[in-house]
Length: 29
Image 1: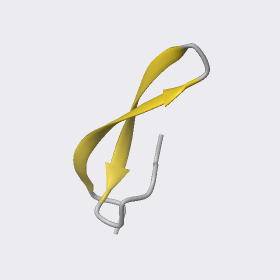
Image 2: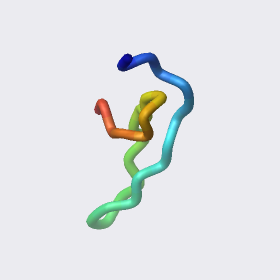
Image 3: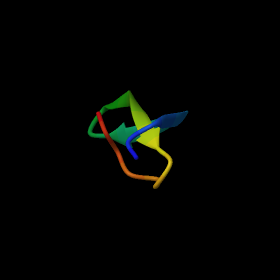
């Protein structure tokens, strides 16, 4: 659990933030 499977792009506010998504699809950043 908590293994990083892919990188997700989270767009919030006025900038794009790169976040880590685990195997469950949750943000761990």
